[in-house]
Length: 220
Image (cartoon, rainbow, N blue to C red; front, side):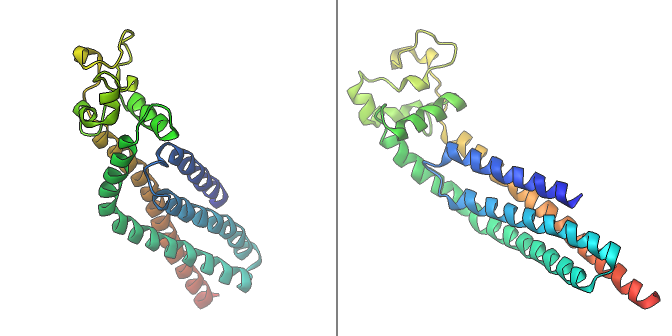
């Protein structure tokens, strides 16, 4: 059971790293790498806990028992760390995103890797600019391209869209900032819930296991 849980956590860590590739241009690696590291620590600990727990059950080994308790405490400490980190970074995420997104959008030239990231965001979220489409009106891109917005601002069904502001009905006018912040918060929130959920289960399991061990020593 614990090995299956370990595999699941490893998969979640992989998915988190994969999702990070979409946001790496404007999101500090700490926001993704730290949760992924916590997941890997818990996954490895749970894998070995499964083995030591089996040894405790079959062989009544004191060494296996100590390893079992030690690894369980590792998970509990990781759980506490995850909770502390989540609280610490929660209020820092939005200002960090806003600053980096603004820098990224300002560097837009339609050709660079950063520009590809902006286009990908605008196409995926069906949005335009940061707060709204008027963000582009003060950009170098807007001035150099006949007062238009990037083609990635065009609606999916607007096949004749050129990015011209003369045809607003063909352009996504909603900004990207709020949707992007929501997506990142949701992604990290789900990961933190998984960490906290497994941690809570492990705390309960550890308490029950220690209690059963004490009762066994008393009565047997």
